[in-house]
Image 1 (cartoon, rainbow, N blue to C red):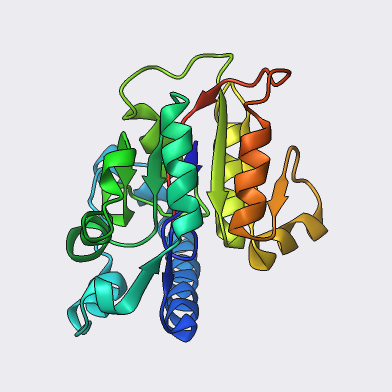
Image 2: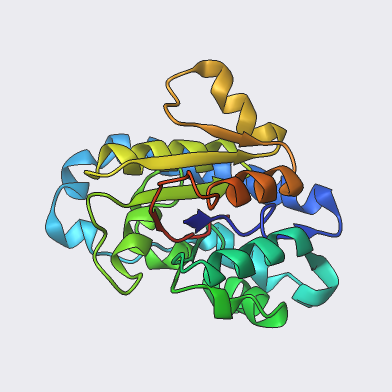
Length: 231
């Protein structure tokens, strides 16, 4: 099962900060797509694909950050309980985020004692393209510690439209289904456009807790490849 980080597992004390970060991340994605139109032939070359992303905007944001993650963020305790229950049930968990891992994401997981739950952690610098591209989800599934089986069902939980789009794109590239889970209104709005097979909607963390708890009732027969979180 896969989870997003910002806005899902942790929340910003000042919600406007998260909105600004998401806006800048979306702008970065749009700029990358525009540049790609002019560099299509170069991107098809192996040497071009292997280049590490520069992520200038992401790095600049974290360089000007003056507060510790403990001052900026609060963990979602309901989802902490969800993670513990999923791990107790043997579900493999992971984090998939568009945020940087070095200097931010890894610090968040350590500060709030969340790292112990996850077998895979994929951040923006670990892949060439972030969400809504499927790269980070695919990378997480490759690093969970075992092969993904055909009968596995992968869930990806996120609070933004790009989380749903990334899950749908990854599902199209794999033999097994990926169930996108929209946590909150922003991600749920993606359902209005349709073309979201198997989309689950949880308006709150408590709704998600109840939804996942129902999967382990005696008549439930889904098998999971644990959460890989995203931002």
